[in-house]
Image: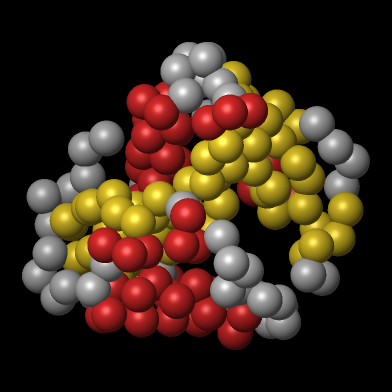
Length: 158
């Protein structure tokens, strides 16, 4: 996946991140998911150490502008994309689509015939459908926000 020349992007595991990367990752998620969305929930859920994280930084300032987390279960041929977050100043630039396409591409490299699952905020259901995801649950509340479960087969196209 190609990002803007004004952005740098890298995939890494938590153990490969610098202390500043970890700080910036957790701060961005807290700023958006907990403070902006006014949702008290346990963001540090124990899955980060085993996950792959895509960190996208503004090349000029070095600030983290977006991230996505991929957890995989190779034996079950399943992966989950989650913790998709974009800094307020980077919204409306197409970064969300690029993050998701990069996540899908990464999963398809690891599990070419697998399945990708996600828990989508209900108001973003149409966005995820445009990426080939299908809704597989009724709407439910998670951390006070309406969500739906969605899934996509690897290689399904966008």
